[in-house]
Amino acid sequence: MIEKACSTCHLIASGNICPRCKTTTLSDDFTGLVIVFNPKSSAIAKVMKIQRKGRYALKVR
Ligand SMILES: [Zn+2]
Image (cartoon, rainbow, N blue to C red):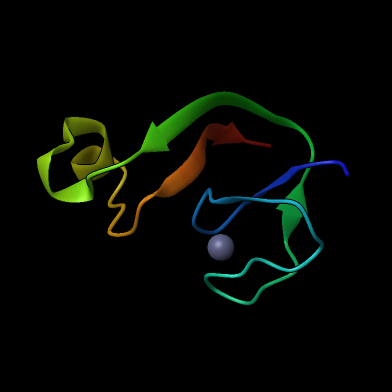
């Protein structure tokens, strides 16, 4: 299945709807992959305002 990144929250999902914000504005044109295991202790999670663990795209076009 093709993975897509949500253009709103940058979460990477394998469907057509973002499981986090329930939007369909997903794009398969994204660069960079950030895996957040512990949002509370991750500097990248803080910068990207990520509050849940998961996989995120750095840039979504
Ligand atoms: Zn989203």
